[in-house]
Structures are given as structure tokens and as C-alpha cells.
Image (cartoon, rainbow, N blue to C red):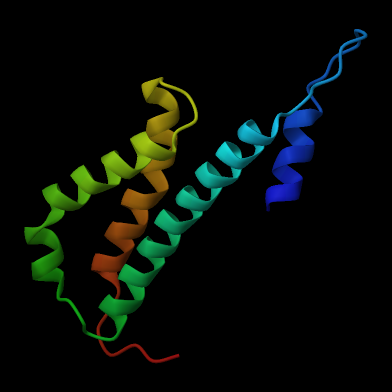
Length: 111
């Protein structure tokens, strides 16, 4: 995923004589943000799995919904590359959707 993202971002160089140069600090910052974002989505996937194997109940997930949304908002604020709220919401939406999917997964589902 990372090479495709870097190629996409470097592709914005335009028609002028300027070429984008990425410093090593910017490169590692970008990798850290991508890894944190990926880890948060994997955490949501693990929530769905734990729900499927009856580790936590829907009642527990509904009861702690406000804390889950707070934690998701904090994670999204950390991994968002820009300070605007729109990008943060773009990061939050799939994680909240996966949380609700985790609530809806029936117990006892085996793969």
C-alpha cells in the first residue's frame, strides 16, 4: 500500500521545472502515519473477530459506545495528516462503521 501512496503523492509535480523532493524526516513521518492508520483499522477488525467468538457481547459494546467513539476520534486526530476536521472524519467513518458491524456480528460464527 505504501509504494502506491507515495507514487500517487509524488505524481502531483505539475508541468513546471520543479520536482518534489522528500526529506528522510518527511518520509518517516509519512510511514508512521500510514502505519498508525492501518493499525487502527486492524484494531477494528480484531473487535469484529472478538465479537464473532463471543469475547465481548453486543450489550457491552453498546454500553461503551461513547468511549469507543472518543478513542476513535483521538486515533483519527493523531493519524490525520492535516489539521482540518474533514480529513479526521474521513479517518473516523470507516472505524465507526466497523465498530457497528462488530456489534451486529452474530455470536458463534465460525470460519
